Length: 255
Image 1 (cartoon, rainbow, N blue to C red):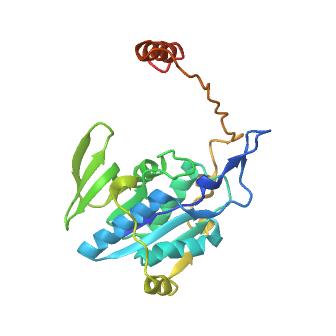
Image 2: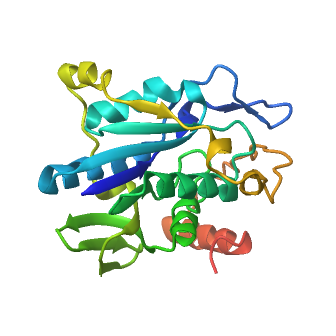
Image 3: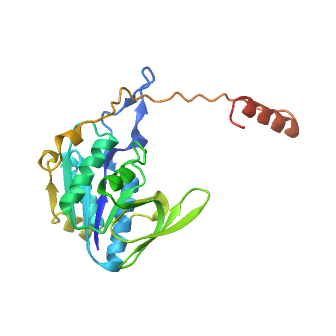
């Protein structure tokens, strides 16, 4: 079983603050890490490998200095990594183009795993776009995966319902945060990861330059001001509940 996992280095969003004067996020000095849900994808790949054997390759589009964080994924059980340095506008079209051509360059694969979304943008677009560009079946929002020799059975989390689907290989699957708990590598795993290969692939050597041109421009990113009304209801309980419901309806919270 050959598995490719797409992983993204992101800013630790829990540390991001907003400048109160401009409402713009302050990004200087923020630590970076692998997007949380991508780690769930790696964990699921390792579990499939433990069951059926095979090889796991990590694909990451982003800064070349992401090596140290990619090593965390190798320590979890991945076998190799390909880092594709790209400092241009990383919108969804460009990233999915790069990933698709990188997957084609790898050539042999059964499953391509992605997190359902990255924790910084949370668009959920890259996995489906990747499947479209590769011409593969896709299964999104996977909450449970049962991999067999000839097919994949997946429980999809659709919020108010669960849908079970099957697919032959190859297939693109995006996983949810709830699918598993990523393992903590042992000291020996961490030391062993230093000897696993990490290759750098320059996108200009295998991606058509037109595919690297964004069709969308981000003009500005701002935080939203969140202010509480701090309304306290001190009347009789029944009257307070009625007033609360009336106010929520007036504000458009309730239909």
